Image (cartoon, rainbow, N blue to C red):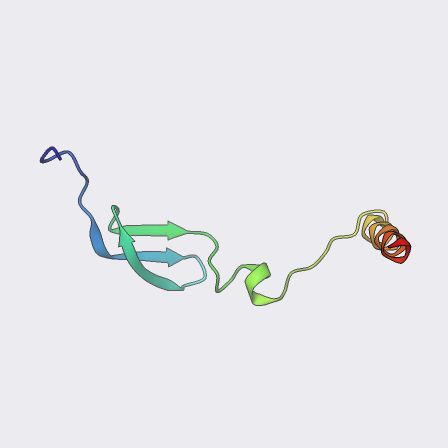
Length: 71
């Protein structure tokens, strides 16, 4: 390996989320900022909502039931 071409690796880098959560990890950047993390993302917190526009979700579920009944 060539010397002096690799970035500095920080073993204790801090990742800060807008929600206030801090995560420590390894990175080539000492401090990272993110808008969403696993502590505030709707998928991970269980607050995810399905937005049904014009009954599309219900139509899909009906089609899936019919397909399941045929099998």
